[in-house]
Length: 361
Ligand SMILES: Nc1ncnc2c1ncn2[C@@H]1O[C@H](COP(=O)(O)OP(=O)(O)OP(=O)(O)O)[C@@H](O)[C@H]1O
Ligand SMILES: [Mg+2]
Image 1 (cartoon, protein in one colour):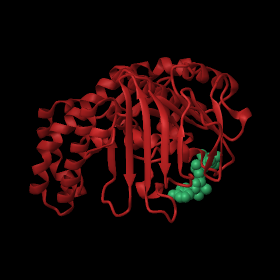
Image 2 (spheres, helix red, strand yellow; image 1 turned 120 degrees about the vertical axis):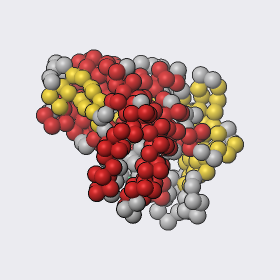
Image 3 (cartoon, rainbow, N blue to C red; image 1 turned 90 degrees about the horizontal axis):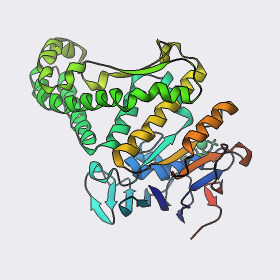
Image 4 (cartoon, rainbow, N blue to C red; image 1 turned 180 degrees about the horizontal axis):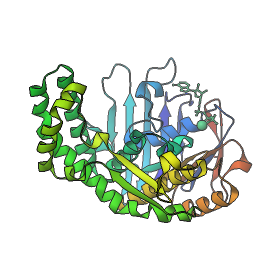
């Protein structure tokens, strides 16, 4: 999959742009605070219609502006596609369109454009709390399968309503959501476990490919029996009084974790900084392969300073794994000599939000 043209208006500090994008991708060079990451954020926005830094939409609208618009013209295995999103403060929700036709639900618009981003903060996948890893799974599986995205949305809505009732002390009302929660939650857990046991089993191989000598593995931490919707009733009965006391739902995939181990020890607690960084990269590589397999198309690759703190050997191994020639790559660096090794793309400059450089075709 390749981005052929990007339109961004009113987006962060970026000067309004409408540019053809070279098939191999681009390197964005510029000093700190000029708009390099903002450009990647605009490229990524039409993937999931949310910020790659998890910023709320209103923060993406230019200071003092009236909202933002992004359009991605994409070349896929199945032909050309145009994906666009418009957000204004008055609109209660953003307006999405596929090939110029309004699409009411995000789940119907997701999947038109596919990219995987490597960000400096990604080390939190290994070092941070369970929420980081749940979000990793949810983003990836939502992009891999529309059913997952829909089940996740139903699950979240059910838990939110259940929790509202619990906050009012209304257990009877809360339990009306047990059924929808079980139905959607079982799908979510089953898909996550299937991923951990399928593509996730290659975590150790990815780690060693990046130069980690110790053995690594992933496992799902949660109640695996909840992958069956009929197993929920008993557990929800058993946790009802606790849920009421804590005023929230205490079982379900929103409490689970994806545990990574290196050398038999939990990475989050015992891993070194370098091991955690390598593990986070390995998770990203799995994301790339998972999406390519699920969607039968290569996602684009967004690298934001991803090579900055790796030693030369690891840089070269990562570059060899990433730059296959098939994938479109967007990479940022402060200077030309800090670009990852082995990358051949057009170089653009970013200064004060203005993107300059050759405009091909
Ligand atoms: N909504 C917004 N409207 C206008 N400007 C914004 C908005 N959000 C962020 N900015 C500005 O964008 C700039 C940051 O851009 P960005 O994060 O893309 O920098 P960068 O080039 O990636 O820098 P670094 O090398 O430090 O990562 C900051 O100066 C910030 O004030
Ligand atoms: Mg940046």
